Image 1 (tube, rainbow, N blue to C red):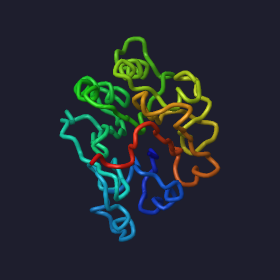
Image 2: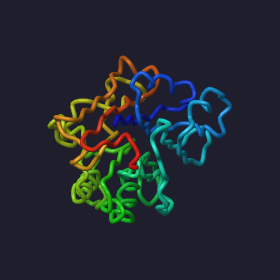
Image 3: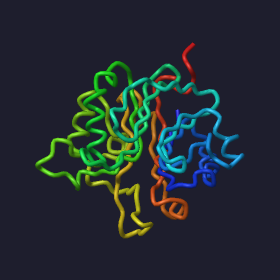
Length: 241
C-alpha cells in the first residue's frame, strides 16, 4: 500500500493532480479545503472517498482514498485536541492522520502527546499507522516538559510504532539529513517535522520504501515536502472479505 502525507500549504484544489503520478492508495493532506464546501467542480469530482475535519473550510485535515479502499472513521473522542482523524483502513489496520496545532495548554507535539494519553489503549488493539505534520523535532525538546518530541517517540515505541524514515535510513531523531519543511520556502531554513510511524510488521528494508519529495520539485507548491511511503507485509490495499 502506498501512502502520501503532505502539508499542501493551502489551495489543494489546484494541487491534487500533482500527486496523481504517484498513484497513492491513501493521501493524508494538511491545510486542504473541505471538498464539500469547495467551489472547484474538479476537486469535488476527484474527492469521492474522503474524511475531512476543520474549523476553516479552506484549511483542514483530510484523508483521501482510492475508490477501492475502505476508510471507516473511528469514534474516538477528540477532547478538543487538533487535528486528528482516526480511521480503519480496509478493516485491517488503524490509521491516525495528524496535523498538530498550537494551543495554550499543549502546543504542537503536546497535542499529539495528550491524544496518545487518551487513546494509547485503542492504538494497541490493532496494527496502526500514524502520520502527518507533527510540527516538531527533538531539537526543540525542553528538560522541564513531559511531552517533548522524544517523549512521544518513546511512547510510540512502547506500543510498537516506529518512524519509517528513521528505521529505513538508519538516522537518529534530531539528526535527519533530509528535511521535510523549508520555512518561508527558504532553503537555508530547513527542518524535519513530518513523520510516518507504523507497526514493525508493516515495513522493512526488503518490502517497504520511504521517499521525501525534493525541494526542486515541490517548493513551488508548498513549504512542506510530501512523504511518500509504501507498506509491505500483508495485503493491505484490499478490504478483508
